[in-house]
Image (cartoon, rainbow, N blue to C red; front, side):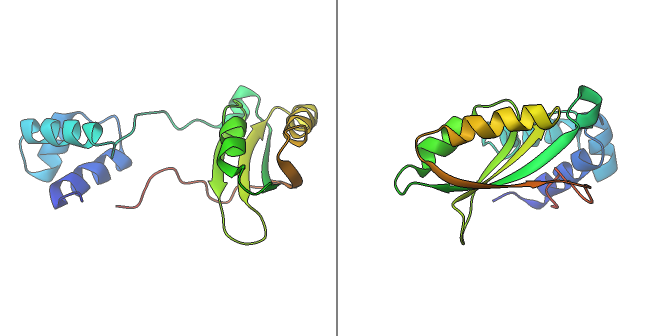
Length: 147
């Protein structure tokens, strides 16, 4: 588990990841050394997995997002999900409960790109069925964890 100072540091980094450790320390009333040490610990333990800019996909030509439900042959779920996750257009792959085995979130440059992706998925030996939902509007797509 993370302690209260670590939680506060992450909150500050969520608010503005470009703050310096010194600025975070000042905001939290602690030393920059304490912040540096806590962040290093959080990185080493895998709590903080990296730092990325949050960009708008459409600026890079990804005009279409889709949510694809998959039914996968019993016993082949992880192997199939791993293979699908290697495609650069795939943003997320989830194991789920219910009627479907997995959901894939993907971003595509257009209908032809999505069609190519779906044909590739359907050609995989253990994908039994898919249902594709096109995203019409993104209401919320939060990447930060509420800590």
